[in-house]
Length: 312
Ligand SMILES: [Zn+2]
Image (cartoon, rainbow, N blue to C red):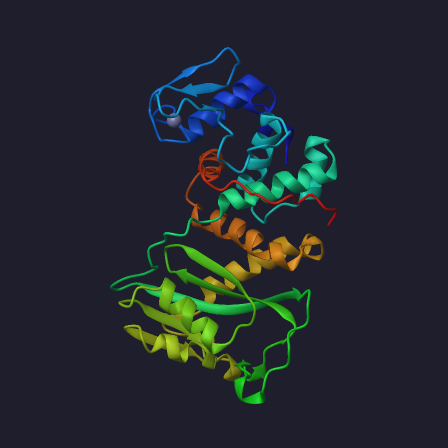
């Protein structure tokens, strides 16, 4: 990351940074995070506002009710964290942020995890796809699970490319709409039940699904308009438009990015790393600056209540 990226004032001036975050969060003007009122006024303390509604009257700042709430980090540090997450193509680590900010590793880790949380999708997603749309689905494995999974009965085992999937690696299932968005899930186990639920909850029935020959997608695929497979076990990788190259391309970016950090990534945090990669993929047509604004805006309503900082 070159220095010139950080020449803008909001990366080194607190006032400018606050203005930047306020504009990202409230492009149409301040909104009280407690009651939603559009009427508020400035208090004597810069950056602190008071709701003008009689029943509310609560004070707030641009950090109230966001992933930044109750943090002692400077807004300029947050701005750098958001920008690094938004602009790095293969993801970035708390170590990189720690070096860029010259702050403590724990602070960088905390900032990074909250920025990733800001990038996470809300819970009210519309299904992917629709009439005429193609969805590719696949699963992948990365690193070892923290707690070994109980053995499965052989009847429940699944097969990938003719081989049983690794039982004690962290399993990820992703769906991508061609020309559209990706959605990734860290699952306890990539079995038929789990995959079918993901397909049912996240894909519009009018879509066509493309997968490899894995049995995992048969049940879910049967509920959609179409389901075509390529047989990787006999080295068939594409049959006309039927292939899973889009989702495999996404997995390869994710894995390359995770190489440097995954040994530091506790399993309970993997979903957040996935959210970060999903976010960047889904905003690939935006500039780095636009993506930073969108990420900062996404921090709203996602205040984390647990105390994280813990080395590695
Ligand atoms: Zn209010």
